[in-house]
Length: 150
Image (cartoon, rainbow, N blue to C red; front, side):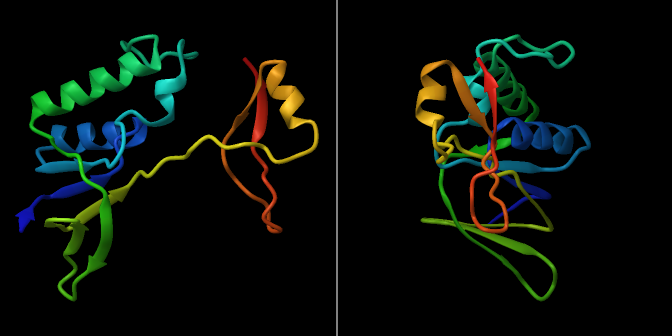
């Protein structure tokens, strides 16, 4: 069993940022991502606003964060997390297909995913360059994501 001070589940912008902050504070840190690192920010060609001192494209920003974290000693695990369990002593166990990892602190930064609005007219709106932002649902389960012009 591998032991860390902090385990971050997700390597999108939030997860990579959290991992960088943790390792900067001297904490032994690991990140987990089953798919592609970077999350939805990879889809943004030009960030506005741009984080201070960062690249203007989402893919460059994500790549820069990942490389910086690796240089600082963050361990990047390319496996899907299959379970998270808290022991009686307060230690968290993070399980993957082939391994169990332990840490007193776990950050879940599982992000979001793009999906269709599911409302009348959304198909023609997409043809006009309007895209959905977010993936929230109201109390009745209807999508509440907002649109923006691209």
